[in-house]
Length: 184
Image (cartoon, rainbow, N blue to C red; front, side):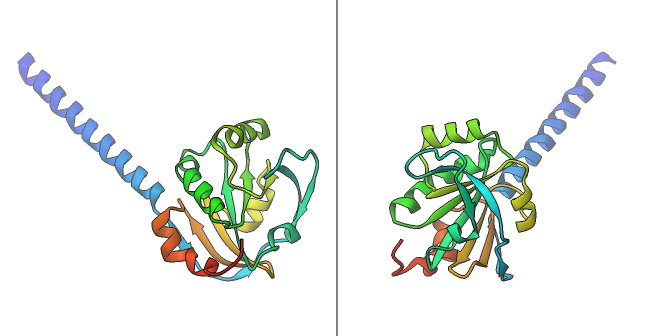
């Protein structure tokens, strides 16, 4: 009788583990998927403090929409130090920066010291980083989660919104065209 109960427990535990592993696998794959939206709208007006720029930390430097419309096209990447998936795309953003692609960071609901630490230790792919500790700008943008990347033109129009990781495949399929022949 005890072996029958023990066998049922083993089967139950095994099935539970399989379900949990399947759920984790599905969650990981969903988070790695990038969704693209092409509904055009204007990037909201804002005034915010810069977290850092490409040279150094600039305490209390104010940034506005004019700071993110200095090129024909630029990327605005929403990220946070606590975002594990953001770490996945970070190396690729550094590669894009090396190619001269203008990228502005929007640091979302983050501890400034933690964010600065990530950029100091892992490299800074951003020409400027907008600090958004309460998520007000992100809310106006319609941010659902991190990472998200917005393709913004010189007039301040959001051309594309990409939810998820930017990698070589997403870059080639969705964004490279806008930067062909464009001086970063």
